[in-house]
Amino acid sequence: MKKRIFLFGGLVLLIFLACKQSSDLPEPLDIQSIQTQAPKEYTFTSNPVWADEFEQAGLPNDKIWSYDVGGSGWGNNELQYYTKADLDNAHVENGMLTIEAKKESFGGKNFTSARLVTKGKQDFMYGRVEVRAKLPAGLGTWPAIWTLASQSDYGNAYWPDNGEIDIMEHVGYDPGVVHATVHTKAFNHVINTQKANTTVVPDFDKVFHVYQIDWTPEYIKTYIDGKPYFTFQNTKKGWEEWPFDKKQHLLLNIAVGGNWGGQKGVDESIFPAKMLIDYVRVYGLKN
Image (cartoon, rainbow, N blue to C red; front, side, top):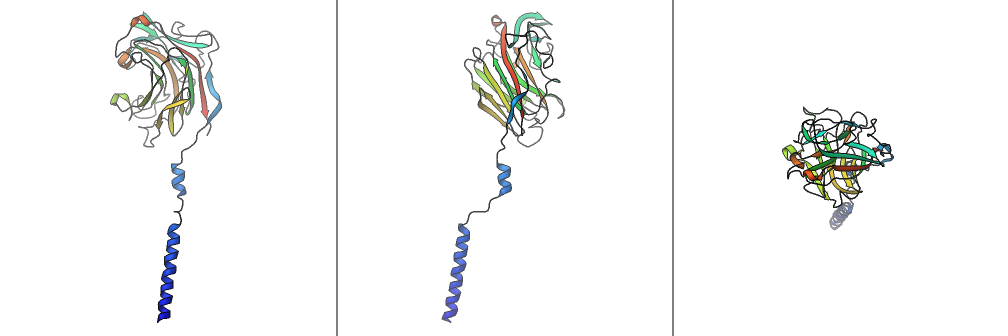
């Protein structure tokens, strides 16, 4: 009987030790979970897939740039008339593109300016965009470096359903505050859900700065002089939140007044107002 008790006790002890050793082992790795959660690394081409260094004087290169033209207010009650191929409003000299807003009557408006676009000429999907620019100062100015969809594949409205990326916006009544914003059907300023951030650039009108985005399938990240300050992640919840899997094109312009730029009026004495652009470079997504 004692022998049986001893054997039974030993068996219990062995089971206890085996269980304890098993419990001390780490949990098996969930490889699928790790693969799902690990951030993807994206790199870009060493050389631009297209660029404009603004080396030829005169009108902007018509193989890259076209013009949005008119004085409709552009959905924002803006005060300028955008002209077409007018050296007074957009010209290249001394290795710089100058976009100039002027106080003059034209097309029923009291101001003229230019809005250059690459639509149909240099559309792109994903990549790194760099624009080295010096911005205008003054109450009522509203310069922008931004992108819009080159097609209308989503929803019932071209905007905001198909997306907008604001690489840089600046309004003259709030000098030195630079805005980066993303607009989609789900996230836009009309319904006060836009995704955005700001950063302070005190010498915006005196020094050239590089305004940049990295656009990948997973995120859009905004930089100034290589320093990131805004990231918009792909939510994976459909085109209403992320329509940025289609081609976009670049826009450069100075608006005058408008719902945002003119909130505190327009100082007519500051015109002409100029945005100088040293270069535009677009790098491809490598992987």
